Image (cartoon, rainbow, N blue to C red; front, side, top):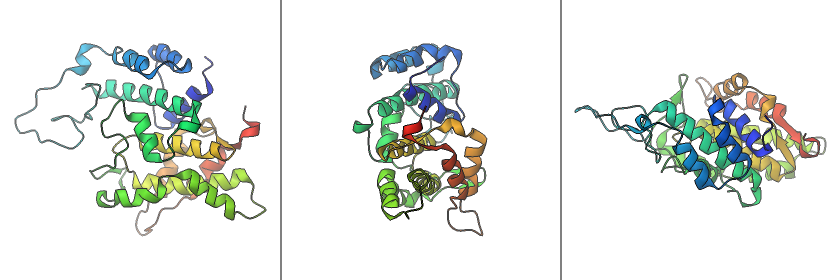
Length: 267
């Protein structure tokens, strides 16, 4: 099925994060293609789940309250009232695709900061969308930036378009615009990945922010040119694992060179 380019771009970003739509999602994605109002898409998403997906578990007497989580579970507290991890994952993905497609359709009015992009993508799902995380996070044995430093470390990364502009202004005459943008975004993405400023949705927010920044400078990103395995491995290899104490964007540079292309030749 041929999708609107904005929907296709968001589906490609979602695939890098490990989510692909099911056949039952076609009706909702058709609404996204047609630029249906957000409230209508939210209604369809909410109605896609049976009552048991919102049944709150009876908390154990000694169950501790953990930030972001429904008490006694590993499911994130959410504005949809969903208590099933599978249902929440599907709803979150569909609503992020819809919100991201709206941003890509109207980039002139899209947020310029990555925090703003995150808020736009996930505001219908999480009340903390766009806010710095307040818990420590780690993945595959690597710890992300300490919680106390997240806000400070996020500040210089908020606007990737400005960082790209700086790279273009200082680029040598032999470097192409496409290459310069790709390297600048790779450097930014690797640093952002380490900071991991949000409790959930960092990868999608970063990819959409990078795409908007690239398009603001006459370049496009086609995330179908890579795959989840390569993308995740780049993130893993970029982390400052001892004895290395700084982020290494090498693998991200390779990935961004793969996906970056001049907009004049975009299919």
